[in-house]
Length: 63
Image 1 (cartoon, rainbow, N blue to C red):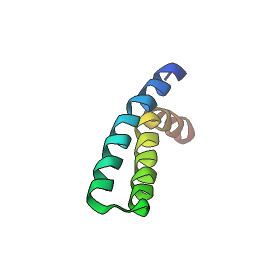
Image 2 (image 1 turned 30 degrees about the vertical axis):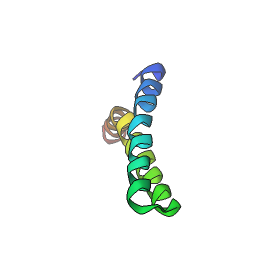
Image 3 (image 1 turned 45 degrees about the vertical axis):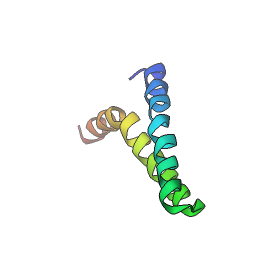
Image 4 (image 1 turned 135 degrees about the vertical axis):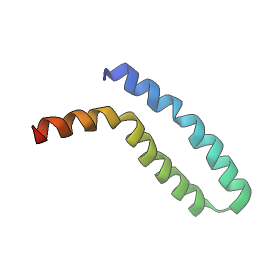
């Protein structure tokens, strides 16, 4: 996958991060919960953005 497309996906994934953080703050009023949400979103974003790259790397290593 080309780099601009990866950056585009990462930028689009910022939206659920902001909206979700606002919802988490509204429910918990706690910075720890926001930190956990942010870490979860970073992991999810990396999984979405790098999914095809990981499959390609896996096929190169196993073949």
